Image 1 (cartoon, rainbow, N blue to C red):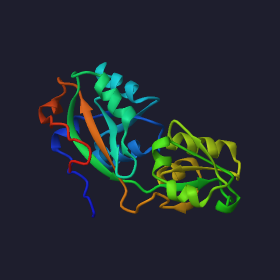
Image 2 (cartoon, helix red, strand yellow; image 1 turned 60 degrees about the horizontal axis):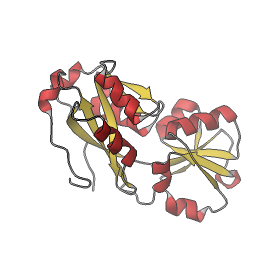
Image 3 (cartoon, rainbow, N blue to C red; image 1 turned 30 degrees about the vertical axis):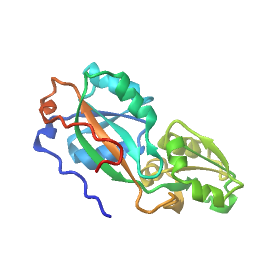
Image 4 (cartoon, rainbow, N blue to C red; image 1 turned 180 degrees about the vertical axis):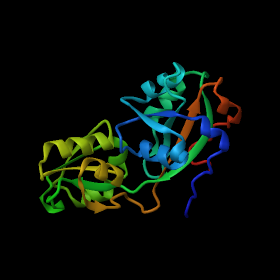
Length: 214
């Protein structure tokens, strides 16, 4: 089933900076670009809680956080951060992003020569079949898919790879060694856009949806 991106309401033009967990090239960064197009710039953060805190203090207009993935299920760390933030933020939109996971390596690397692969645990959970078919790979959890890609690029080691987006490959000068390594082809992550009650977009608040309630 093909899921079309939500239309961007005209009022979202007031958005300027949208916080997200991860580094440039992360799937949350991709979601911001796809949903807001040229109306907002992603603001990378180390944690989900930090992203929400930047909305609270006015540094950012909103935060884009993942809620659930079609394969891995609920993103518990993000849901916990939202819960811990209390009732002071409102959810104004949700967006489904099609997730295509890629094995990225430095130029000249080949999948057969890769010995270790790193990525975010939620991304790794979406690639169990691929990892089972490549049992020699040393699987290393990382805080962020794009951060894993950046570290692979900086190390320049042909035996190391990251599982991340094609955007991360472009950003960090990596090559796609294998594309679409997620367990199922129709893979998606559902994101929420959260803002302050006093933000102009807050009047568009929507009720939270339960996992897989689409």
